[in-house]
Image 1 (cartoon, rainbow, N blue to C red):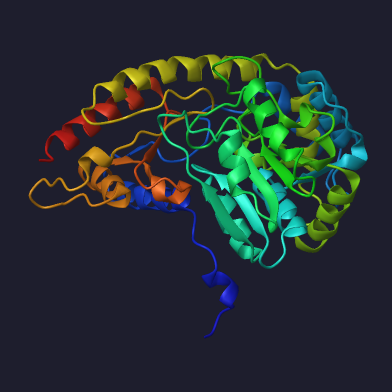
Image 2: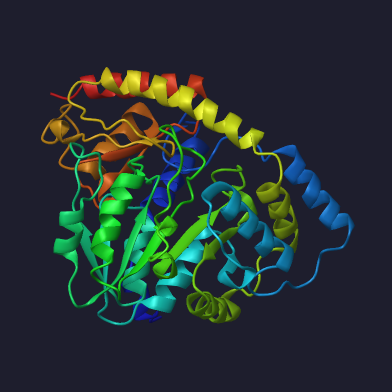
Length: 396
């Protein structure tokens, strides 16, 4: 059977692959601690679940408008004004089946064959693959642990060419935890002002999980706002990963383009999720704040444990719930049976020896690093890092 050549353009997400391998070991009776997946280990807040139950009882069970119910799009606008001081109208909002679909809509609406998309490393695994699906060209800006995994204005300008169509980044960043300050965004904005044809995709899905202060969006600069496609959703900040609700805020032309695409793929997202999302976006934020408080405690403990590992170079994450250490000091080492040549070997060694799952940095554009989540209980975090330290001690 000959399948479409489209399937050869992109790779399976390494995050999902590692989770699958962990599940397979677990099915064999192995006690695997999962530090690979990016999912809050909290239940959805009760007031959001209550809204969903009410929606079921009120028979919100029919097809939904492609961009989402009007009250949901109004709720998104309310949230953006309340949290970010950004003014949008419902016509600027498209809700989708997760922020991943929002990203796909935006890329497919913007990128043509041969267009260049500039992405600072490290980046979420799906960014580069969506560009490949659209037949675009990924242009990486390599950042480093030493500069906090953030791109500078000079690096950005050096990467832009006449073929540049889109700049795509996240803040807070998955996997590094980097958070751009207003001053840092202003420096990037000065570059974008010189190149008026470049569209900016700003992924802000980890907005509420911020350890260093107020979230700053690049859409705040009024002269750039029409060129920004803001991506967000409910998975991370409201512990609603399985509910599948993401959204974009963009100028009406881009929003309409995304609506047209989505109309042929999925139409509108789940009616019950949409009604629950209204309660999430306009209701009590205290449960979200409490989650961030717990992530803050886990971050502190994780960094203590990471610093006890010889050879690791680790940036202290400013947001999200990952550490992304440079582990290249272990490349070339062996326990007599396994030799570590790269990040993939490193992750597989930890999975098979320490029974801890992680994600190799190659998937994020950083081959010297490995991503570990701290979206797990404190007990599991401490147990996992004890195993990691013991396993790495066997490498000589």
